[in-house]
Length: 237
Image (tube, rainbow, N blue to C red; front, side, top):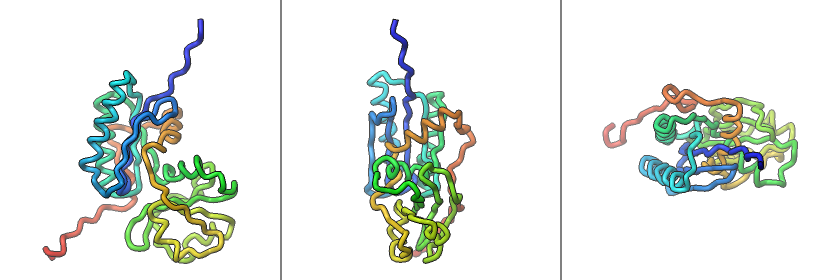
């Protein structure tokens, strides 16, 4: 009798931390469903449609859902609330665990997977655009060990000097483009078109599941980093 193959988890992934909205389903470490909208902040309408399509796809192929993973932030306040609310609703309704994936770690995944030209000693600084010259950023090594915690940085010429003086540092994410003219250190390198996408969440979500690192569906909140500040429309001032 042949031994049974261990079943890999089927995970629904939801990513809404930036202007891009994406949803994916993975099984056996393969992306079996993906939908992405990069036309702007349409999360309120797109996310629900994409999730419904993802669940219908899994059901039509008789694939039971084992977990839901959501990008936890930092990022867009409204986007994160939409994604987390959707993820919590599906996890609760299906009775499956919820995994929270740090958004800045997620940004590093495509760099680690597809960029073979980056030296082993390089450091990663994923950046999410905030306002003006402010970004949400952290510093990681290639093993995704955090060398500096996530924080809001106002980017100036010497903001990352400590790390740039050590060796090559790669900046990427939607906050990196506006920093090119400021960070002119010879060890500063910039990677274009790196976005946090649902299809890249699997390695981090699977690792969290294997370690039992799930979050409470009822009480989990996104990692906003900064409080939301509501502003009045100019015509009401």
